[in-house]
Image (cartoon, rainbow, N blue to C red):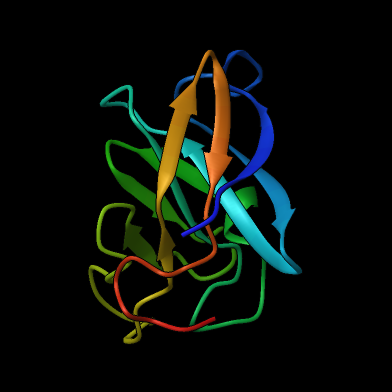
Length: 110
């Protein structure tokens, strides 16, 4: 599994998400309230809008359009209107930098 450098961990505030492109895939990188970094496909499975523009609460990312909430650890939605999980990706922090792989860790293909 290969990882790509996407930026500095210091540039992503706790409770914030950024959008990056990794190997042609749009990915939302999130600095969650548990102080861990997570990466998910930057597209809501209900409506084709960027999840990186949504709100972070705990380990959940909420789509700004219709309020679908996704668990950053599993990609699973917490309830309607989304019923389909989003892909999650492995994240590594190395020397203060964020690295992301686009090999889905939850088996959901982008």
